[in-house]
Length: 137
Image (tube, rainbow, N blue to C red; front, top):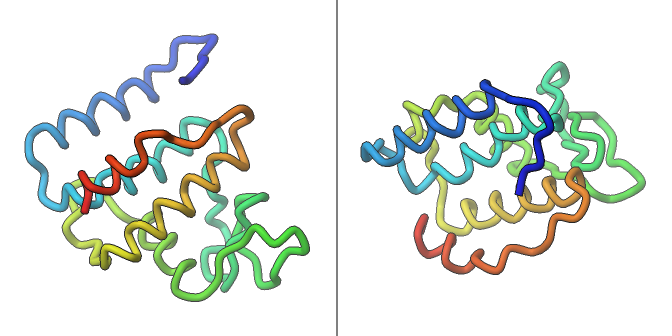
């Protein structure tokens, strides 16, 4: 649950417009949850820093791309980093262009949930995760 102290029209508009497009039957619905979770981080204050997108490692704890594996171990490398870069550049109108296998989609969801848990105090494991996986299979 989000606890906002102030009116946040940008957050509201993002959520509202995303849901409207999803309900309208947008192409690539199986990628919607990934797009939504990734881009929601911008409004929650822990969006990945993109000034170093060309680096081979993504530091999940610090939210930045880097060229070295951090000592804390919360990082992504290789193809996983490339999928995060694709998510960053993805527009909701082009969800069908994100070509992922079911295994990659599930892995990306796990990475996003880990990222959230590292940045949102008190976030607990989603009990509905198996249902979400089935919906977006």
